[in-house]
Image (cartoon, rainbow, N blue to C red; front, side, top):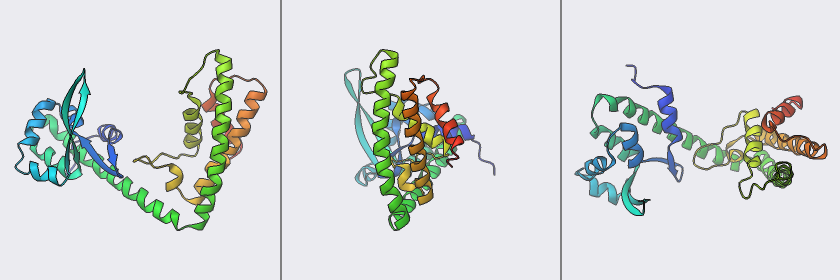
Amino acid sequence: MKVLTDTLTIEKITKAMLFHDDEPFATSLKISQYFGIRHDDLLRKIRSFHSFDELIKLRKITELKRDYRGQKFPYFELDADAFAFTCLSITGKKAEVFKWAFIEAFKQATAEAISVKVAIQCNKANEAWIEARCDGKDTRRSLSDKIKDFCHYAEEQRGESYGKNCPYFKIITDAIYNHLDIEAPKGGKAPRDTLSGDRVEAIERAEAVVMDFLDEVMEMNSTRQNLKARIIERLNQNEIF
């Protein structure tokens, strides 16, 4: 049987997924948004479950408060089990696509969380990875210092301070990860923690090339424009893969 959903809906929901200790969960706010029902109606429905007290006790549902216009309003966080149970209680033709999409998103998020845990455990037992990770930390610290210098350089060019929101930390990191086709794992884990030793070494080599490139830009008083594309071009020239 073909499930009546679409990839874009699944991707949208997966990106909105939240995590506690690498385990995905959903909020009643997001559920009401995706299923197109009033949030207070959803809260009443969840509270009406005969198993509600038990779900609270087992911490499968957690009741929290959010601030809105000076007032506090309740909402729920639901783990995968409580979410699936809630989905079954929501009816209507419009809801069906979102039910399947939510289920698929949870499956994907859970699978990724498990793969991250496995990768981290394997890496911790791998001496080559440990050595690459330690070397990479030193290179990353040097790159962070270099990016700070570049932020000051860019501020002088634009004649205005970035304050605490200098964009080049993200721009430069994104350029390296995009070039190496690396995607940050869910749950706040660093890519270095989940990658193999050779990929960690590739990041280190790329960061070294980028530091030289930033020095070159600043020494030549070159433009800061299109920096991400220029970094990727330089990494291509140096055959960092």
